[in-house]
Picture 1 (cartoon, rainbow, N blue to C red):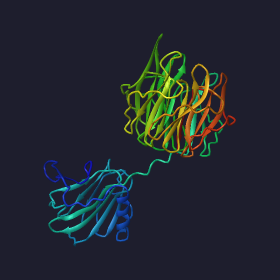
Picture 2: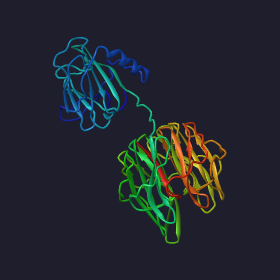
Picture 3: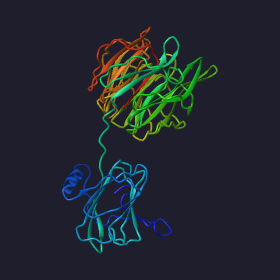
Picture 4: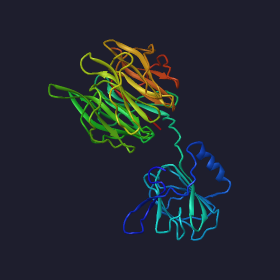
Length: 445
């Protein structure tokens, strides 16, 4: 077992004395074994309504979905039991890792230990079946495994926001689950360009950082609800900067990284990052890893990881180096670049677990793309489709597809290009909404 699953905690005494409880258990294997175990017990168990209370008195023969979203739950077992009595507990909201369950064996033994030991389980998605063996062993777990979470299926809608027309704007344009871009929505928050956006919380988004013009960088953010509503400014955290990138990781968190800031006539390219929690809270600076650069892009891959790629380390010093982001938000050192070195590009996810970098410039406007596998491997150039341009944005939509939009060809545009769930970029779709560049985009819902 891993974590504190099955640990015996002497919480009735003066101290917390940990004692591993591995004896007497018959654990199924993960995956198919867990599913088979559930099928095996389903017919003989009477499942009860979801339990949200902080206490529960369990009854033999019952199954209990325990929802610990708001609080932990202490479960008292029957004071008497017969050989073969069975009780099942399951993590309703996959939240036992935050608020677990504590089992009081109520005078009977549990895994051969007497009632001076209570048992705490604290693993998300756990399924626990206990069977009464005899007076010596007492209650014995015969199923004690975390059921794997279903892989994320991706958000169904997207949003383009902010950017530059003849000046900075804060307007947004929603993208439907069919990839249709809506007309302008009146902007909320400080108008700015050269910002970044990503998802958080599994179904929400966040715009952050950028410039308001005149060499002024900011770190403010604007949350996007799961209905696509943009909130007013949140006070910035971390180094004010622009020309950065952002992506999600861990299934429900995000990361901003790299970029540019200036102090008077002095300019700085950076590789520092800022993590975004699953509640949309931006953390302070994390020391940068990899090549300092700006005007890069980032996207998700593998269902729970991310990748930063490309950019520039100075005027016309184009890069194709990439940096992988683990499912706990750790940025890796540089990976040797693949494809055309360029800047002012964008990226998004597609196909549930893959990504795509696209467009940008290497001195000339480009429409080239590079696919990212579900292992984070970047492919060589794919011949560009659609109008070559720089400064666009991109986001997922429809759960497994993507869309590139806006940018400049020398003149700003609102044209979009859909990305299929196998990474094929479509020809231009006539633009909707205000033409602009240097905007950002993310998905929601």
